[in-house]
Each structure stands twice: as C-alpha cells, then as structure tokens.
Image (tube, rainbow, N blue to C red; front, side, top):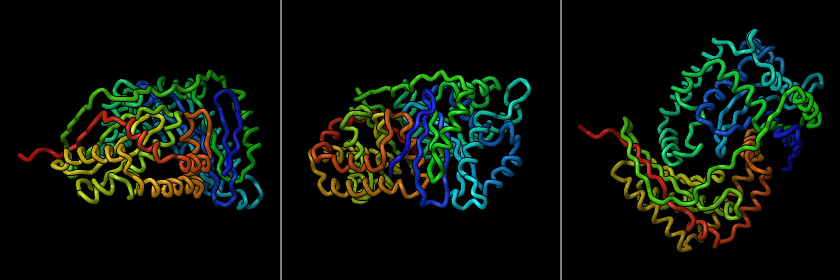
Length: 424
C-alpha cells in the first residue's frame, strides 16, 4: 500500500493513504514535541481542551451536534511516547465519502473541523483557556494517571523505564505526574498551545478515499497564519551497553507478582542491524514459537506470561513477566539462559516461524484504517516513512547469522520486581 507525502511548511507534513475499501475514513493531526518534565502535563491537558471544545463549539453539546451532522463522526485524542518525544494526536473517524447523500466530502468537513479545533480553541477575552475548562481536563488527566497506576502491568513498566533511563528524557511519563497536573496554571496551558503550534513537528494523516490535494490546499492556507519556529526533534540519548545490572524490589498490595528485565541493545535506531534486532526480539520473546514462551512459560511454568518488546528508537528491549515471587530468580536465570542459547546459534525453528509471523503481522497493518494511521504516526520521529511492504522486505532479508550478532549486542541493565506484601 503506497502513501502520498506532501510538505505543508517547515516541520509540517501531510501523509495520505488512499484506500477505498473501508466504510470509514480517518483523519488525524499529530504534534510531536521533545519529552520535557515541566511541559508534558501541560501538553496533555492542552490536547484535552482542544479535543472537547473550540471557539465555534464552546461545549460538548455544540460539538456533538456538529459530529451528528457529519453522519455520526467521532473524535478521539491520545498521548503517546515515541522515542524521546511526546506525541499528541487528535483524530476524527467518519463515514466514507461515497456514502454521503448530497455528494459532499465528509472527510474534508472533518479536516475543517479538526483545524478549527486546533487553530481556534475556546479562549476568554484575555486569550487564555477558561479556568473551569482547565480544571475539568486536569481531573480527566489525573484519572488517567491513576488508572495507569492501578493497572499493575503498565505501572511496573513505567517504574522500570523511570529507573533504567533515570538521566534521560525517556524516563518521563507521557502524562507527567499528579503533582505536576495539579500545579498547572492557565499560563502553562496557554504556552503549551502556542509552543506546540510554533515548534512541534506536525503530521496530518488521512486514511481513506478523500481528495488529498483538497486537504493539502486547505492546510496550506491554515498554516499561512501560523508563525513557525521549528527545530528538528532531538535524537534519542544512546547508551549501547550497561556497566552493571541494577536490581529493584517494590512491595505493594498485589496478588500476582510482576517482573521486568530491561536490556540495552548496542544498535543505533538507523543501523543496519536494527532490522535484524526486530527479528531477534521476536525469536527471543515474541510469538508462541519464541524461546521465552516455549521454555520460561510453557516448559518450566515459571510465568503466567513472558514476552519481549524492542523499542528501536530507544535501543532497548523490555521483557515482561507475570510471576510468583518465589519463581522470579529462576525466571531471570532462565531468560538469560535463553539469550545464551541464541548467542550460540540455536534458533533454526524459531527463525523460520518468526519470519512468517512477523510478515503476517506487518501485512495485516493494511486491514484497518486505525492500524494504517498508527503505522505512519509511529514513524513521526524518523527521517522518512516506510510502507508495510518495505518493512516486510526488511524482515525477509534478515540473515540467519545476524540474529546471533544481535544477541551478542544485548546486555542486561535493570531488573524490576513488583511483589505482594510479606505475610505477617
């Protein structure tokens, strides 16, 4: 599936994926900013303000009326962490243009709605967001932060990132902390908005059958009025190897223990071996054919789940397990043993299974508008966008011995154990 890319202005890009087989179109505006501790919470609150009201749609009633007139279009906002950037996305899902009754382009109307929300928020006479609106968004954000803390699988992952990358921007939570959110002033939120319009890398993705040239011309016009001061996004801090292993143990009221192992990979994001590192991670702890699933989970029953995930832009692999406290040390030893097995070149069966599974997974990106949209947003920090087909070719071109090379570039950095309270 090919895409169309057009540059709108400095650091502002439009990527269109022209497909006509879905019932819906999906248009998303994504703003990428460096992860900065004193700004992430303001950015997240600002996104919520843009997503739920605007100058023309002062409250949810007006906004919902507008969405209903667009054949029941829906809006969604998400905050994500990609590389060492915070990415704020505001998207609209709407009916495919061919279903419109009077021939109007529903998707183009959604583009106009999104740009109206982003460029013309609801501000008071002094040009600030309203206090009560800010307070409402702060409450929503605090609930999100708390619900992540209650979801122990996410919680322990965040804690591991915090410790493992303690002196790097990647340690920062994408939402910030409850304390940061509570301390926000209206100046902070206003600055977050003006800063994002001026400095963020902005990507507009359009998945569906609407006319990309129309969208391009509309955005070109909108951005004429914006004073841009774009600085390219920062390169992630690269630490290839860890000097020593750091161990952490946290006791809280939890029934099932959680174990995370953080590994550094001595491969920069754009090194040739980064393509093979994806395959290595899958063989190590990806599908049901992987070393960790087959041995640590199935054969030795040390974990309820055990999987590995490679973050290319951060040159790290995180292995997550659900595990009883008494099995944790055995699980760590077995995970490291399986790494050694791969270093010794024993992974023929997994190698072939992994190629098939990974190419299937990447190929299935084209099955839904949401996965196509996410595919391109995930590449917002990269120099160029790759199609799913290009990545499938990369996977198929990985050589057997490159997996062993990758295994030898992986070193354990952090072990984080989250366990229940000790019995009295």
